[in-house]
Image 1 (cartoon, rainbow, N blue to C red):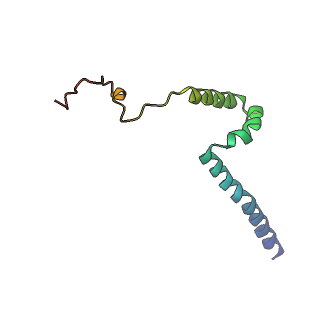
Image 2 (image 1 turned 135 degrees about the horizontal axis):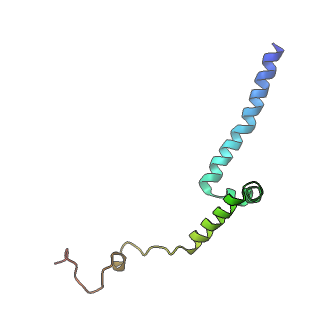
Length: 87
């Protein structure tokens, strides 16, 4: 009986520790804030992934936002010129 209680206790403690960690990992991935916390460890253990994420971050900062959908220049239209659908 004592062996069964020890096994249940170990499994319970393991679930109590890993459950919140799994929840935290999912939340961090959704919000994208894990980079600040895990960045130093990633740089130590997997430098190529760290460099790749840094390149992605630079690329995202350089992206130009698209013009609004109502903007006639978005479709290549010239202001003042009628389109075939308008005729």
